[in-house]
Image 1: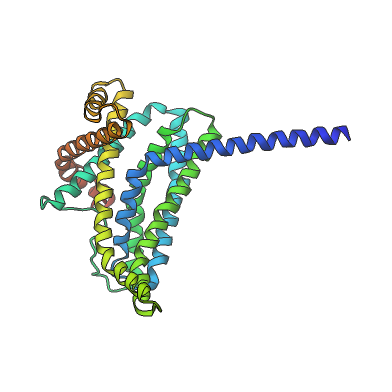
Image 2: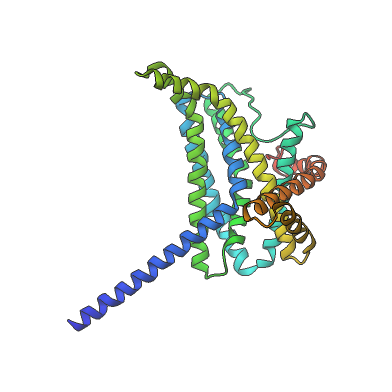
Length: 319
């Protein structure tokens, strides 16, 4: 009996350790996922465009196919690559973060420039339906969306990896896997709701038994175009903020302290020492820096990187 009690005690101890580990993984994944919010919001803002021109019945299957491809990218390609880099070449993480932050700044600045009528925007699908075969067109759109997602997923996983405290291999693997699954579910769950909101609103407007229900349905249908525009604005602002923040923080880690110290002093002067105001001012300054850097990078990205990408992959860079 004493042996059985000892065994049960050991099992209980292991369960407690496992539960604590799960809590640690969940906490780290939440923090790491929050750091990648800018890229995730942009992913959610861009993806609905891939549904344009398809029958409503095909929208959710297309979202599912893109989500499945995104999760495959994260778990099969990016997670092992991130773990290998973290354990065998950690010196690669800061340069990759700088590259990823620069990409976010470039993408955000290009969207701002396009909104102001300058240059040509290349983000997302072109909406062309030259191919009359819906099945083949769907294949093209899904492949294009997954390729675009790979870039954003790589940035998300790199940011998440940099936000994980030093720990053992399995803790990092579990945290990254949870980030991959959580962000993919959040992004494409939101995309599914967005692309079907019109249909739901139309159904409520036509079939609602109550006048309030019909009014809400009409409001949803009328409001969705404005919501999508607002989402694009929020996504662009988030990209510039996150991109600028990554550049500043990573530069500080690499030994160049002046940008972060200058921004923190300026934010403190604006916010007057109040935490919320200090944070808001710092975020705004990071975003301004991201916009300026992105504007500088636009000619480099469009005139140099895009042609090289096209020659290597046989297509225009998706960004």
